[in-house]
Length: 361
Image (cartoon, rainbow, N blue to C red):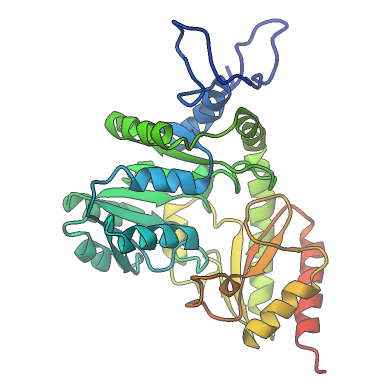
């Protein structure tokens, strides 16, 4: 039987139905839709099998992140990447400012630094690759060091997806995704998901989801499941294009730096080859001329779409430094989420935009 599908019976639907009910008849496995829904269950079954654990669907990626953090006791110490998704850093900083937790931001590519910061910590939060500077921490070594100090390890696996990287197999306690991104893949769903193997942790996360009401709608879960069905095809096309665009950008005269682990010159290239089964669909690059030139590139593209988010079938581009909390980034840094358009169309568009942004006068 295919994962997340109804039983293989004559006349049965191929896809699971969308169960639009807030309540269920008494004395069954479900009573109220804040506790569960058959449409979520189908999505969770597929993600769990892909990651090698038990999945829980949430209303958004931030809801999934918050649920992991909220399993910690008051005053717990958290270690997180200095280069992390801005939403994660903002959440942790907000909780730290109110005394809910103590926050240590470190370079997570340095196992020794993480180990030192993890002494007395309850949670080590990792991203692989990091967003948006595309660094790749050594997950196995870092998980081992964190566990030796008694810390839980969570890995944001949004960029890699379970097709390229399985954090639980590398020692992580929980893998987290913004399912809004590559898993759903069509820029139309807001959802998150956690995956773990420990029953006690699964129960704690399920309790957080229920008490905080961070549950997805059944239609969103259905749409995300439909997106999952094409994940491998979308990843294959987008990753191939991302690698080609990264190589061409690297030799472009107005591009000063390309951040993509598939490039031989990337500081984590060899580690990425061992740890992941591909280099992903995300490319960050820095253009000469700083923020003004980067904004001009975004304004000149015609095939790429200037917008935030990532992981959809359309290629998105944005200057990350335009957002609050991202001022530490190089002012000319652009993050490119490569979609499934033809690679030559994408390159022609980027080349024209780079030329237009640097044309005299």
